[in-house]
Image (cartoon, rainbow, N blue to C red; front, side, top):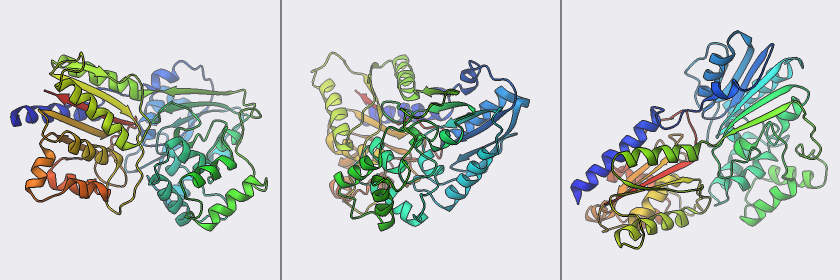
Amino acid sequence: MSEKINQHRSILEDVVNNFVDGNFFNPDVAGILSRFSVEGNVWILGSGKASFEMARQAESHFGSQIKDGMVIAPESSRELKQVQVFKGAHPYPDDDSVSASYELWELTKKIPEEDAVVFLLSGGASSLFCIPANGIEIDEYQKTYELLLKSGASIEQINVVRKHLSETAGGRLGELLSAHRLISIILSDVPGDKPEVIGSGPTVPDPSTFKEAFQVLKHFRLWEAVPHSVRIHLSKGMHGDSPETPKPETSEWDKHEVKVISGAGILAGNVGEYLSNRGYNVKVSEEAYNSDVKEVSKRICSDAISILSNKTELKPPAALVYYGESTVDVKGDGKGGRNQELALNAAISVEGQHSISLLSFATDGIDGPTDAAGAIINSETTLKARKKKLEPEAYLQNNDSYHFHEQMDTALKTGATGNNLMDLQVVLVG
């Protein structure tokens, strides 16, 4: 069995390397922009984990038409020819995020109405491009983000709150550019591909309300836990003392156009085709999952074990491909991310089964507040851990998947990939 599992690991590592090298998915921003007829000056703005690469392609398309531009990315060591690159932080915003956001906001205010604007948005922008609402300090903002991300709330629920705590999110940038020709190119990292959810929707109208933000915090028992300034701001909003985000029914932005790139499904299909060419019988999930990490892991492991027990038409050697965004209700004080936690859950579930291996991968290369992108486990992982006197259940209970995978050499580290397409899971059976 060990020889088969070693072969699995090599193939799963190849999947990751091919993605990082751009072989499975590379957003064709230049090709998309070529479908829009844009004359005169163009300003390139943007934010998100993939905004650098998106801006590079925009530069190649527009060339001398570009008047100026700025994007906010997780790191600013690389430079573009015509577009400035500013650094922000993720998953929690910091002073760099706020100062860069002010720079982008002020630059936007200088754009003449007759000039066109292209805004390039990808996942991570909720943290990278944000100006805390009046009266909320950055450390209070960070605390709220941390509580939300550990609560088990979905990304859509989290972003309802974020949009009502930021002066840039929930369509506020779109409102600033309401008279301009604005083309928003949005790379989705969320199930459902709703533009108002991705990156907290800075350029599109927002249907959510202050009351809904309050309800999210109440539902997840965070209302009393968030800083007092956050409660004050949301309360003022509910009473009409703070302006609501721009609403779809009242935002007549006739010159605005939106193109959403749904990349995760394309990626999963391309990974499936690659594995089919490697001799596997492949099944690719038809839609993104959006549920608790334990439920996602249970479904994936159940599907894999069904193949071994001949309860499905798919026969070994088989490959299963999934994509989506899970949630984690953090109770412990350990370190990890949802992909590392999913992998640890799965390792326990498939323990001792015949030749099952799983890759769980954050496609941005950053799984939670760690330097890992996820993990690669197999049906021997927890057996070997127990021989080393490591109890996987204890690590899971403490939400400490990072240190489990570090000790078991199952952690996956790629560094930032410059892309962001939800999470990807690949299971190899037999």
